[in-house]
Image 1 (cartoon, helix red, strand yellow):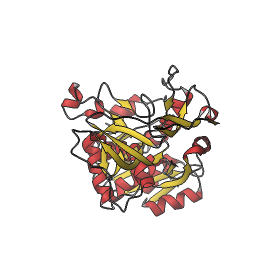
Image 2 (cartoon, rainbow, N blue to C red; image 1 turned 180 degrees about the vertical axis):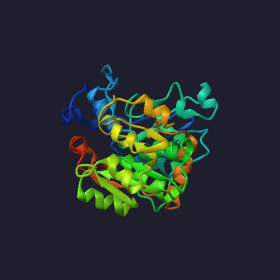
Image 3 (cartoon, rainbow, N blue to C red; image 1 turned 60 degrees about the horizontal axis):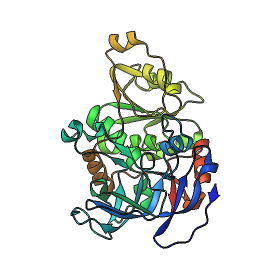
Image 4 (spheres, rainbow, N blue to C red; image 1 turned 180 degrees about the horizontal axis):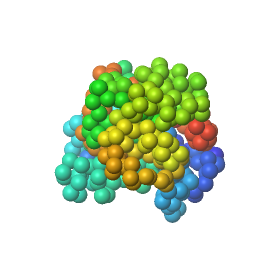
Amino acid sequence: MRIADSEKDDFMKAIYIESHGGPEVLTYGERPDPTINSQEVLVRVGAAALNRLDLYTREGGRGLKRDFPPPLILGGDCAGEVVEIGEQVATVKVADRVVVNPRLTCQQCPACLAGRDDLCSRQRFMGSAIDGSYAELVAVPAANVHVIDDSVSYEEAAALPTTFLPVWNMLVRRMQVKAWETVLVLSASAGVGTAAIQVAKNIIGARVIATTSTPEKVAKALALGADEVINYNEEDITERTKEMTGGIGADAVVDHVGADFFSKAFNALRPGGRYGTCGATTGLRSELHLGLLFSQQKEIYGVFMGNKEDMREIVTVLNRGLIRPVVDRVFPLQDAAEAHRAMEETNFFGKLILAP
C-alpha cells in the first residue's frame, strides 16, 4: 500500500485507488472533505466493514473495471456520528449515532415507486460507483442512515447492512421461512452466514443446520445459535443434511458462496423446498438438473441486498438486541491492505473492520 503526502485544511484521511490491482494499489492519503446537499447528511465514520465488493472493485473484476482519474475511495458498509445535516433533513440530527445503508437508489423509477427499491434500475453502491466509507467522513442521503442504540458499537453496526439485508430479504420477505422449518446455511463463518444463523434462529425460530470448514469454526457456529454444524472437509453436505432431517432434506437453503457448493446444497433440499442465492464467491457458474427442479417442484430465489423497509426492520431488531453482527478483527484505516489480504485468505469468522 502507498502512503500519499499531503496536509491541507478541508481534507480527510482516506483509502483510495488510482488503478486496479492487488492490495498494493490501495493508497492511504488525503482526499477533499465531502460536501452535502439539502437532503444529505455528513457522517464521521467510526467503523467501515470490508465486503467482497471492495475486492472486486479494487481488482476491476466482475464488470467493475473503471477509468481513472479521478481516484475512488473504496468501502460501503459503515457506521458513525452525524456531524452535519442538509436543510431539508428531519429524520436525524447532529450527534446521532447511525448505521449507513451503502446502496443508493433513485426513488423515481417504477420499482422504487412501487416500494421495490431493491430492484432500482439506477442503483449505485458506495465505494464502487461513488466514493465510499474507507475515510474519515462520508456524505449520504438521509434516507440511507438509521439511528442505532448506544448499546451497539460502531464496529457491530458497520458489519450489519451487506450481511443482514440479503438474508432478511431472502428468509423473511421472499421465502417466508416458518418456525417449524429447517434452514441449511452455507459457509457459517462468512458475514452472511453469521447473519443467516441469527435471523433463522433468533427472529424466525427455525431449526438451523450450518456448514463450515474447521472444528474451530464449527464451535463458533454452534455458539452463535446453529443447532447442528457440518464440517464440509470431513462430511458430505447432502448426506449429512438428509441424515439430520430423517431423509427428507432441508426446507430452505441460504447460499452466498456459489459454484463449489451449489449441487450438494441443492440436492440437500427437500421436494418443494426453497433455494436462496445471494452471492457467488467461489464461482458464478454451476450445472442445474432441470428434471429435479421441476419434478420435485423446488423453487430458486435470486436475492440482491434488500429494500429500505428491510433495513428499517433489521435496525429495529438490532437495537432491541435480537441480533448482533459478528466482528472478527478490527484494523486501523491505514492498514487496509493488510485487511484485504486477510479477507482473501478467508481465515476469519464474521466481518473484518477498518477504524479511521
